[in-house]
Image (cartoon, rainbow, N blue to C red; front, side, top):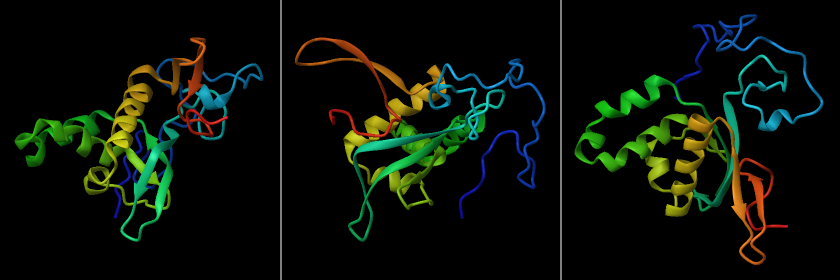
Length: 173
């Protein structure tokens, strides 16, 4: 059974921060000039004033489950301090520090396709390109606060921005 790690929630799952300012940012009326999908301060409902804690992604290759089904889309939540500290006590990480990202991603990836029990074993079975994607995605949402990346077209060298959480895989029209 998957544990709930939602910060700011009490034992009953109620939002313990409802009606309070989040990280010093006062609640504001929704603005039509920006997209809630790219705003880390826009909550699940798209309203400003509540911080967005879950981010959708699409794996480059996809997770292949035991039945051979491919799962590409998923959800990663923001990491808490506990998420980053607990793996340091894990014997697998102590034995092999490179395993830290596997354990950490197993804690913050909420879903990959229809697989909701995501743990280190599932992350281990990802293709290397998908693991690298999730490591970069983790860094972007937790350190940078967004899922946008600046890229350059390999054909014409034109720089442009892409949303790594967006609908569609890189390179597709």
